[in-house]
Image 1 (cartoon, rainbow, N blue to C red):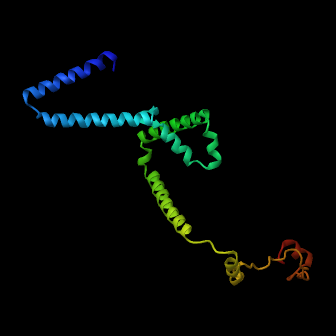
Image 2 (cartoon, rainbow, N blue to C red):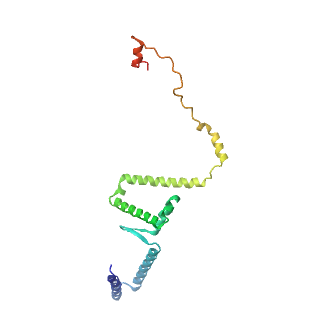
Image 3 (cartoon, rainbow, N blue to C red):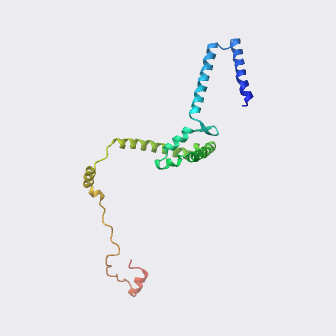
Length: 195
């Protein structure tokens, strides 16, 4: 929108409001309430935009400063320092933009609607729910003391014993089998009938 059209638009809107109110098409109180609600919504959006500025728009999606910060916070501690500098945050933002571009292209091409993709997403969802629940349950159970762990181990020692491995190549071979049948014994041993 150009600067001229931005300055003309409120004047046109005001004239239209005056015309509608003057003709009695809308009650003045209803219009005032709607206008006040719209102004409040706009001011909330602009206040939110000022406190959380949009860094990049990818298609219709916006990547805000808080999204980048949340992504950094989800990283393992040893990698967070890589993104503590402006250059590091820019690298992460570039990566997030690339990710959004690929996501939008994949979505437009119907990848998310494929049966095998839906199946994998469902499986990952189930796994995440179960894993989260188990982690919560395990966190509420106290860890056993060293003496409790040792006592349990001693009670179940047979479960941890394995039979000795077979001894290969250490036993003495028995007498060679004699060839049976006609002919000499050499022929039988060469053809493998002793097996």
